[in-house]
Length: 151
Image (tube, rainbow, N blue to C red; front, side, top):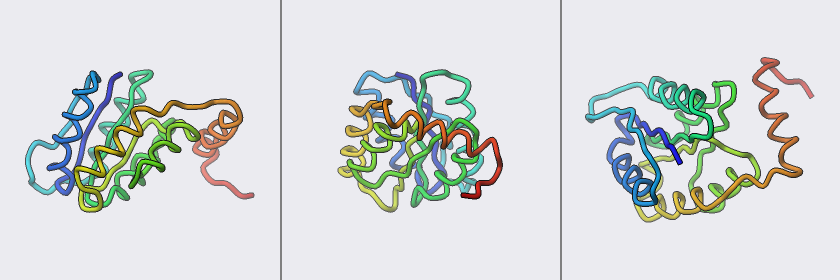
């Protein structure tokens, strides 16, 4: 499986650890930066990953910042991206099984290496269940096309 990974300056330390975990599982991981701890803006790196995921059918993205919140907010602005902020194994599993998430967002300042490894293992093992979830995912995708939603 192909993964694109990026972080901001607050997520750069755990980025190498995550990349190594995915590569040990046999996945191809392309690191889109940054490559130093100099301050950067997370939306720029979210955009790099999301564009690559959208251009490479069947690929996934990994985004890391301090909390994971900014990355997930930026990533979800892209039509076709379903980014999930995951802080535990359960949220990672559900994001893939029920929401067909194609980008996982993590917070370096929120989760340590042990938790991140458990999240990555859960994410990697989970597969989209389709069935009753397909209609819901289609509705999520449709929201970005209408601009706003009133229920």
